[in-house]
Length: 108
Image (tube, rainbow, N blue to C red; front, side, top):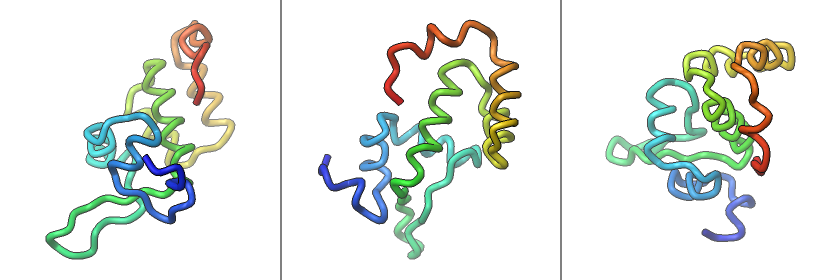
């Protein structure tokens, strides 16, 4: 992976997946579920490439953390559409405790 990937305007799906540490299949799955969309798609019919931006890293990291602690994708989708601190707090209240040990040692 190129050290300058964060300086790029768009990253290929492979570059983005490597940068955030998730699989290409997971990104495609999230796209199909309308949970996390690429910032741009190839414009020509033959090119179905997906491109992401460095600014999307925060969102995908939030999704990864929430799925790791057991929040269903449908719930994440609902909350992330209009993400506010209040909605995030309500979401964390429905997550079964204890989430702290699950998150300890993570570097998101």
